[in-house]
Structures are given as C-alpha cells and as structure tokens.
Image (tube, rainbow, N blue to C red; front, side, top):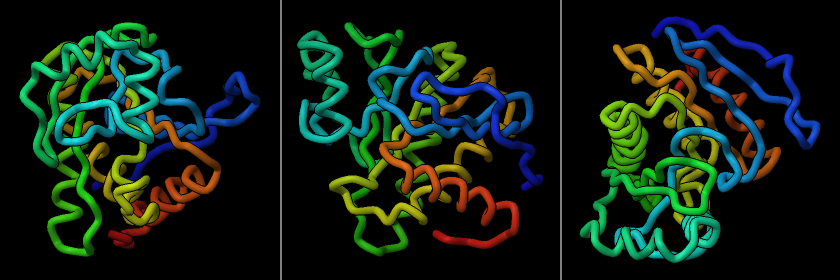
Length: 200
C-alpha cells in the first residue's frame, strides 16, 4: 500500500474540534469526533443487528433520529447477515441514504477481521452502486459487540484505503467517532499502517 498523505485539516468543526484528513487516490478520509446522526454526507452507515431493527447504541440513535419510516422499510429488507450490507432511505436524517451493515461480535477468531473488513467493503460497494459520493461510518463492532478499538480502527482504515485506491466515485469517507479515545486510536492506527505495523 502506498503511504497515505494527510495532516490536520485547517478547518474546525462546529464544536471547536479538529479533523484529521487523509488523501487516498482521488478521495479523502476524514476522522472526527461527532454525532453519526448529524453528518452532512450523502449516506450514513448504521451499525445494525441482523434483523435491521431499532436497538441500542448506533442503531438506536439512527432509528430514533430517522423516525418510524426507517424501521418500516427495514422490516421489508429480509434482514442482513454479518459482513453484508443493505441500503434504505434516510427519512428524517440529514442524508439521502442509510447503509446498514452487521459487524462481527468479537470472539478473537480469525473470522473477526475478515468479517469486519467485509462490512466496510460492502458498504462502499453499495455507495458506488448508488452514486453516493460521500459516506459516514461509525466505528463498527466496537460498542456492545466488543471489538478492541485499536484492532478495529486499523482494520477499518485498511479496508477503506484499499477500496479508495480502486476506480471509485466516492470522494469523502468520514469516520465519526464517539469520543477522544476512539479518535486517538484511529490516529495511532494510521501511524501503524504507514509504518507497516499490524495491530489486527
């Protein structure tokens, strides 16, 4: 993988925080601390359960902000297997689409990184198939699914970087993190990737 180019973006977020921005091919990866339900990207990714039902964490927040129409549509999508992704409208969210993916429940097995990578790749494929040029991700599987944040951060960023080096129309991929510790873990993961160190 080619070394990434990046630095602290000169812009400031509304809450006064900074954003890390990395150029990959013709695209950008942005890393911020923020609210996944308040992003201005074309699509937002839901850390879903296999039923695509409202629940806790990110799924609860997204369904709550989107309103009942989201579950009404999701209930007709036939669920979603771990590592796969489905797309819906975004209803009351400030996005056009929600892309739902089911991350792995961390077990320490060799399947965990493969399935986590599949989540990111399949979401990005759906974005390209639907002419989505910007997309926001939460840190998949790092909440109640128990995936260690350092390993999850590197797995997420490697998957996104690999995808963006392909022929893609996606211009911005944003990682929206829930706190400073998760933000710092993603910056450390970037350093590890550039140094050729595997944290996964």
